[in-house]
Image 1 (cartoon, rainbow, N blue to C red):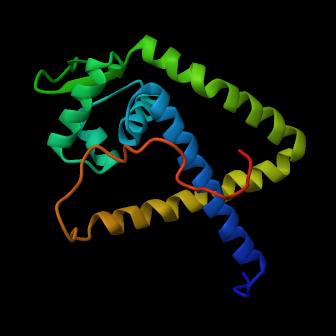
Image 2 (image 1 turned 120 degrees about the vertical axis):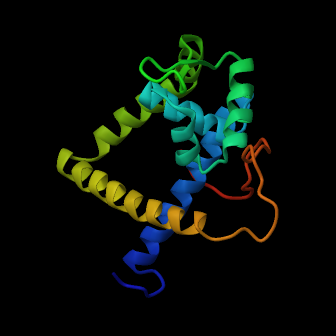
Length: 179
C-alpha cells in the first residue's frame, strides 16, 4: 500500500480511525443510557454474545484483575443486568448470565442501529464487496488483538485504573461525520 499523503493506505487508515471514533462515541452514549461505564457495557456485550461465562474468562477478555471483575459484576448485578449462579459441573466456579430484562433494554437501544446498518449497507454494496469488507475486518481484528496482548504485557507507568472510562458525552468536537 502507498504511504504517500492521500494514498489509499493513508485514506484507509484515516477511515478506520474515524470509524473507531464513531464506535467509541456510540458505545459511550449506549453506556450512558444504561447507566454504566464502558467496561461494564463491554461486559454486557460479551454476555449477550456468549449467554454465560465464568468471571475469570470475563477478566481475561476485558484485561481486568479479579478484584476489578468482582466490583464490575457487583455493579451490574445491583442494576439488575446480570445474575451469578453455580456452575453445573464445578461447584467452585460461578457462571455469569445477562438477565432477560437487560438483554431487552440493550437490544431496544441497539436494534435501530443494527436494522439501519443492515439495510443501508446491503443497499450500497454487493455481496462480493461485503465479503471483502468482512475479510478485512476479521483480519484487522486479529492484528488488533495481537497488539492488545502486546500492550497488556507492558508494565504501567503508574497505578492501574479499574472500571473503565466513565465520562459521558462525545469526546470529539467540531468534526463532521455520520454514523
